[in-house]
Image (cartoon, rainbow, N blue to C red):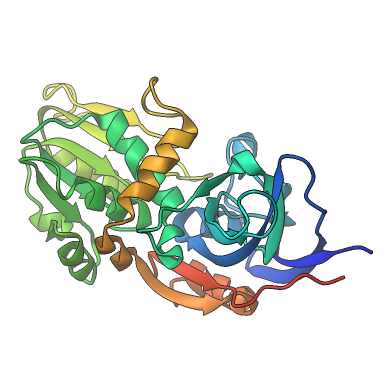
Length: 325
């Protein structure tokens, strides 16, 4: 008999639905996972939701287990935590870069064991913390660096959390929303609105996905300073102030993208393992700012996209996800 599971699909800009999808029997080297939680990465997923992925980036933006093609219909997402229900890993909690779906079958190599010290509800952050780890590897900060993170969204706050205990560093989260000060406090870093941020930075991570944010990042740099650019602008064009002091201060803008491992001596699996180990720290709970049931996703996603529900990571809870036959 045909087995099915429930999955969230985007149909057109501003709309989505829960569909029944075929669930294969796990074969050799595969595992079946029952989802406990997934996470909505608000920046990237709402960009996909509104159809903002430019055509020349369709291949780059594909999620590992995406179905369908941009712009729509598409099953998209990459923050999934569940329990393995088949094979040698039966009963183990795992993280997988899988979309929002009640159950799924993937190669065993596609899942990463969640350490016992990390709650499943927090492990949904692993994909974003992996991005933060990669950004720090790309940046290679030094002891005593003066560091700013411009953009206190999910990625920026994850970077701030990773750097909060870096030896001797001054770390400040910069965001136009004063409500993000509470997040910074929980993460153990400083906070400033753009106009009051500390300058003279050796290193600035930019993750606001705005033209104004990138300008702020450049303005905060000391001579020879570097901006690590993590923002994804989709099909939008932005202006960058490369006149004025950019050349005289010998500034650098360096891109960072999680599709490439920031260290040649590490693999994707090793990077993910580092991210999950970091999540044993309960400070990361500050990044999960709300939760909803899986069945509510068609109503919740538009509200996340338009800001009606303010969120960093919005967790989706699955209860006792079952399989239909």
